[in-house]
View 1 (cartoon, one colour):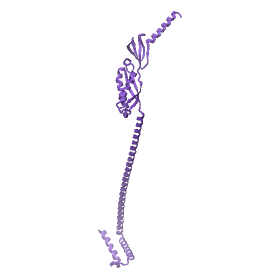
View 2: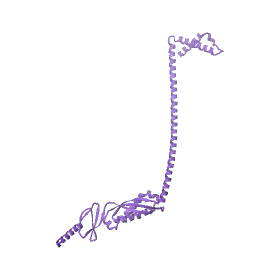
View 3: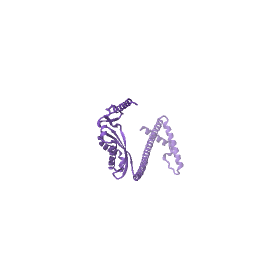
View 4: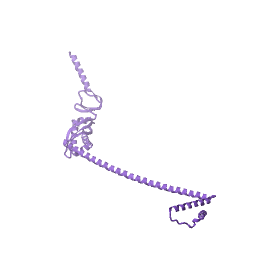
Amino acid sequence: MDIATIISLAFLALVIITVVKTAQIVPQRSAYVVERLGKYVKTLDAGFHLLIPFVDRIAYKHTLKEEAIDVPRQACVTKDNIQVVVNGVIYLQVIDPKDASYGINDYRYAAMQLAQTTLRSVVGKIDLDKTFEERDAINVQVVHALDEAAKQWGVKVMRYEIADIELPATILDALEKQMRAERERRAVVAQSEGERQAKINVSEGIKQETINLSEADKLRQINEAEGKAREIELIAEATALGLRRVAEAITSEGGKDAVALRVAEQYVREFGNLAKTNNTMILPAELSNIGSAVAAITKTLEAAKAS
């Protein structure tokens, strides 16, 4: 290989290196921090960029996407001196690539350490029972502490979530017994409430049944009274109608004679019955003159009609 070929290859390699150093393509949702001779110059957004070869260099590359960082498990002591093991997840996002590059050496590691410290402090202020109930409150307090510190790092802490809380075996056993006792108590209360409600329902049913029976009896008596009244009214109307027809028959031709004959027949029949049922008889003075008795009755009817 001659000297000209070597020079050509060296020139070609220099051109390739120069192009690589000069042209930069930044992916979407990314940011590159550029230094010129060791000093910050600018931040490259997504797209195609040209740099000064051998003078500018890409010092830091940051993603602008939200990142999920796992916080390692750590032991925390609650207010009532119970040790629990807690692990969680931090969600953060780079807002200012320059501050994220020069504000702190490693913002991910710093965020994890601060999250652990803050979590121990927050858990130490509450009792064990409230540790499970107030997860949201714990998460909010950790996020607030992290976000205040991360402002100088060019990072925004979006949220913190407790992934798991582990308890010692003795505490778990005690909690299980407590929960079992609470469930049994609730079962007894529910049963007593059910029995009480059943008794109330039965008494309400008896009460309603008594009311219904009394109402039915009342309606029955009203119906019977109305029926009797109607019966009396109908009998009275029928009696009046009968008397009216008898009166009309008496005033008609031959009516008086028929009445006299009827009275005489009844008089003789009743007198005969009296003789059959009694050994001792009281005879009226006018017994020998039945005609006079019939005439007296006829006179009475005429007087009633005249009045």
